[in-house]
Length: 62
Image (cartoon, rainbow, N blue to C red):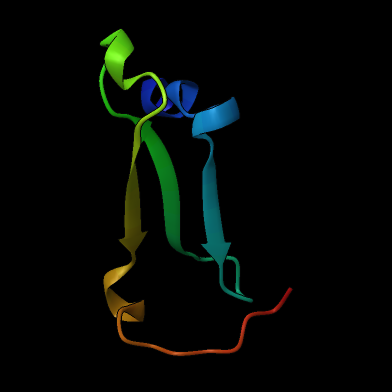
C-alpha cells in the first residue's frame, strides 16, 4: 500500500471520501496509463466505493 501511495502524488494524487464517523467510504485516483512517451498526457481513472456504501445517495458536505 505504501508503494502505491508513493506513486499517487502530484498529478496522480488520491482523493478520499470520509463518513462523519471517520470511515473511508471511497476514493478516486488518476493512474499513469503507460510509460510510453506517446501516452504522456493520458491517464486512467480508478474509483473505489466501500461495499456497504454502494448505491447509497447522500448530499455532499463541502
